[in-house]
Image 1 (cartoon, rainbow, N blue to C red):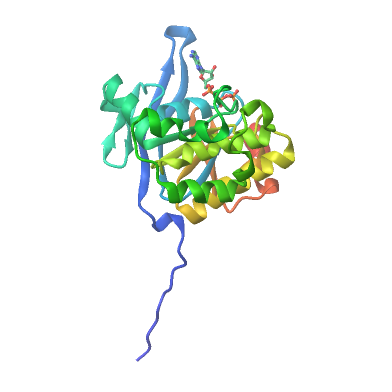
Image 2 (image 1 turned 90 degrees about the vertical axis):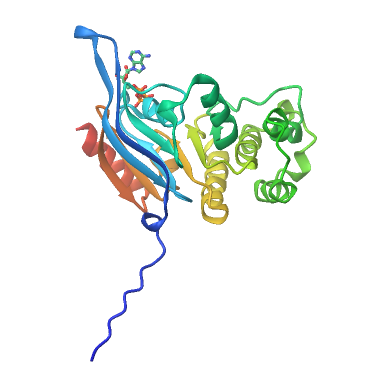
Length: 255
Ligand SMILES: Nc1ncnc2c1ncn2[C@@H]1O[C@H](COP(=O)(O)OP(=O)(O)OP(=O)(O)O)[C@@H](O)[C@H]1O
């Protein structure tokens, strides 16, 4: 009698989804000026996965991220964060959900200029009256290499250091998902690579779920998975991307 055993490698398709969007559509305008920014998008993001969203200009990347994050309201469809259908929440509940369960990283670092690096990192926890996980704080400072800069004001930090402060701030509360909108758009390639390596490490080592919008195939190559939008629809998907495979798919989409 023969026995066959299948050993499946741990991969993100086995992990439970943290964010699930179903039938997500967003239209702007009416009549002839009507634009389908998102057209019936179904997508899920599993725990600990680092996903990049790409696509030609106007394909709906920002709209998708804003609807997933509860920064914009979808015309139809649902978005679940864990068990919460965020499309049913009232404004106040949505504000609280964004504050307590989601991390944000933007192209502009959005640091408060009069606060030190450390104070900036701790600010969201203070505002939410949330206890600070000192162990996680220490780990984030170690991984970001910000230790010697903690008492510096943002104006005394390089762009890359400022963005690392913004990333540590977004990750400190262990949010269920982090949305990053062109996080390396304002950085030189070396600083950008440091920030991206840190995001990748956060996904792998801390199980942090990250969804990043980017135009840059090199940035996307740090992700585990790249999803491509065209005309508001999911058009393609790549796993274990390289800058070259991402570029090839983008060119195919744009042709
Ligand atoms: N507030 C708005 N009013 C009307 N149309 C909008 C609005 N926001 C976005 N759109 C349209 O929706 C579509 C998708 O836009 P979106 O900004 O999501 O695309 P994108 O892929 O992020 O583009 P880019 O790469 O240029 O940032 C585009 O046709 C855009 O013109």
